[in-house]
Length: 365
Image (cartoon, rainbow, N blue to C red; front, side, top):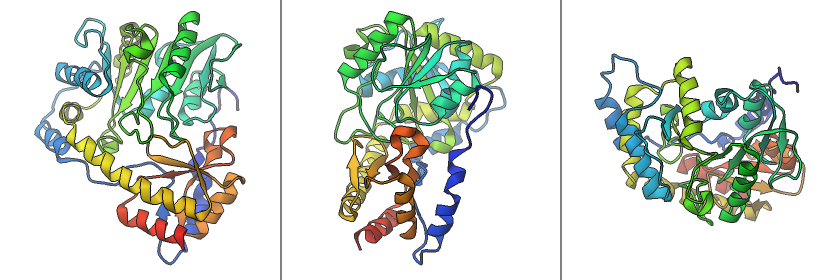
């Protein structure tokens, strides 16, 4: 892959497995893509509808209400205190979901040279964002001893696909490494509200950041915690100098979160009840599916948080994909996420209770 070419879109390679699964008499159980299927909570839908009269353009900066709500959520739920969210240089701005931000961040920061450091097993868009900016990537789960001209570090905790949670000690090591080199450290924390066996800590938390957000950014999303992936509602927060650079580029490019969506975000960020209901729903599915996977002979690794089970049978991931397709179950091969994932598959919890129960029955038979 060159700096001018994008990788093949990975999901296209699942077509044969999807066709095979569709032949199952009970129909397909699709656990491959982590897209929510439950209804979007009324608290968001009502706010969206009430703000539907929106004849003017929204701003890239986000409304004052949204920035205030975001700062309140970060403080209340994650123990993070932002610099003045309404200051001249923003410490938080809305984004069109999180994938757009991940894919464009090296470009928005104006990076023209250097290496992007990403996790060993990683969401593919970190690499795509580097490719779009013409930058090479290095995969590492620990601060590397030698990287040619590092430009940006991506952390992902809780991780996609494997649900791994980085400890405060691990996060602090990355923060120190980045600050010693003047390299931004960016944490994708889109699953931070979904801790199961571990409590995720934000890179912006004072126990990690040392009380200053210099050189640090965090990415958050309402897609999973608020069952609102279709709203494309995300947040970027942290070092005002870095957030400000991103905001300046985004407003030139017209990357604007629609006004009604911003109103829905305000309502969602102020309401914890719908998040707890989503947690309970996903937690129940996780317990049922994990027990069935283990009864089937799979081993679940990591998966301390997030919306996925990281499963291995100590065989090539495509062999496991085919085994499950024979049961009518579609999963994502671990190779989508880097060479270190080639003996795992990712199973999403984002299916209806009826479909999860169908998968449980098939795995347990």
